[in-house]
Image (cartoon, rainbow, N blue to C red):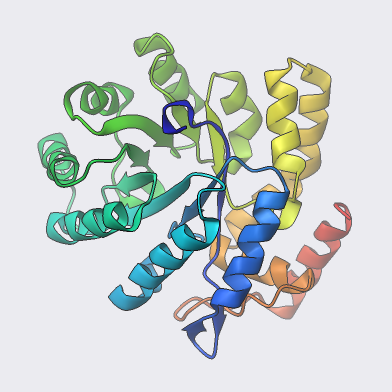
Length: 292
């Protein structure tokens, strides 16, 4: 199943109630996402506030997500740690818990050289027996990996087999496709270029958008796959206002606000993040009206 991983990888938020993880709401969200036809569930990404969870919370979210999905779809667990030691520890735990893939971003405080990044991934690979997705997200991580470098890790580090590209540079995706002769799966992580990325050969789209848009992201992907060009364009531009909004206002903040508008009490993001103000909540509510 993992060798052919593709399609819509849906990211969950981490719901809170009284500043504790609300697993009943998380389970309801997972069921909702699966009902929309997504192809995999991803936990502990930026939308899931991975950076704001303590170790016990992180482990519990990973474990309960994997157990609740229960093989219905592949589960991807995100790992974004400053130190190699902690990244390895979380990778080992995700492996033990039964995650299907780990998505690893080289989060940095000091600028990292390619040699340092390579050794970081190499250490993680040596500690697990599961596929690793290289995650390039320069805005969040402070590291921008070239297509050549990421593909060198795919070639030389045993467990690495796929790439999530979130730089927003469509030319980077063309380079990955061209340099690998289309043999290395890469996934789009930038909502605003989803249509371009899928047309450029992306194996799928990693996004929290299905939390609010339901089946529409999968419809877009299917239209591209069936070469329905006009339908794909129409579907993309229909979704774009909301896609732009949730990125601009922050995924955890805006997706949680949208879920609340839709009747799912996912709580507020964890401080220092703040919930949407009244004006932006109204703006989001009006946007969501277009998708009812």
